[in-house]
Length: 330
Image (cartoon, rainbow, N blue to C red):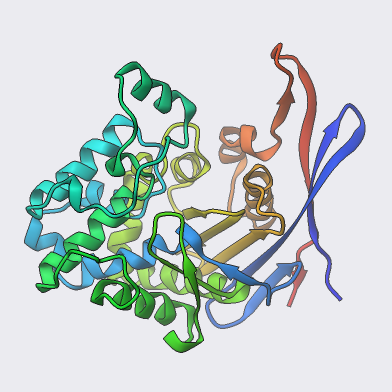
């Protein structure tokens, strides 16, 4: 038996829609608390990016190509395709001696509609460098160039870059590469699924490693000192790390979030059952609030995510979104 978390959309005083979610809190070795199923098989999706960026630190890629925290934060990003994101992605490519044609992520319209309108005003369609994953792909190319691997085809599952990505995700998840369930992500590279509890373990271990000043500390510092690179304007990852710089947070598609609190040595993983991102944001804030990770000023700064308001096309308030959960200690 388990109690599910629920995110409910109220229209007036009636519940119109309900999203079920699961969440796990871990210290890296054991489950401290949970709501819903801790064993729910879950794809990391983009929540794996902080782990996939670690080889850039540990293998000396940053030093070789003079890449700093801003570039490293973008390698962890699911960004809005704002001009500053595109500029930093191009800077990474320039420093490794490649151009945009080498990016294999494909282009898509920006996550923020306003950025899409900017491209329309410029009379052009988005290219691969505007992909929300262009930073990750630029980082993968940097890893290939650093090791002397052929950068062409770097997204293929048998390429050394993707084998390194799988090994890194397995290492932090506490499993073997052979036990990872794999698929193809939206940007064309492999993505990885493990039980939700293993994602929470991975984020807790990442936070503990950061607290010890190991390689994870460089990635964590990059993310919290340049949160605007990790997502962008009006995005929870960015606003959460601005409100509480002690927290590292990363979104994944289909209703996934991962977060860690290095000082506490704890990690959180969350999955909305139906993949709704509308539900994932208030659910994450509710879990972190229940854990005591967020103080009153931080909660005030995150109010738009904590209790989103539903408006009609006239801008009138017609509903609200609320979270119901009971964290069970394990």
